[in-house]
Amino acid sequence: MNSTQEANSDRHYILLVIAVVIGLVGVYLRFADFKHASSAANIILAIGAGMGLKAIFTIIK
Image 1 (cartoon, helix red, strand yellow):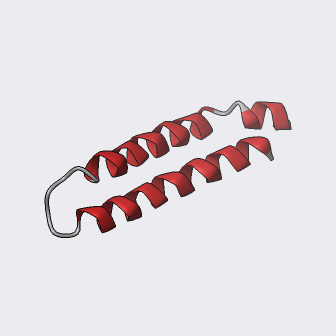
Image 2 (spheres, rainbow, N blue to C red; image 1 turned 90 degrees about the vertical axis):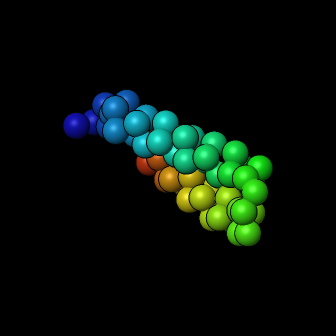
């Protein structure tokens, strides 16, 4: 498989969508009202951002 076909693979874009959804969960969790909401939101947001960056760099490569 050449690099153009690899970059256009569906799995990369599915991973991007999942990363965006996880990031949005982290953003909305900041408004929750429980003891460690901010810490949990930061961790979830970092996981989403990491997954998004991984997908983007895989597409670029």
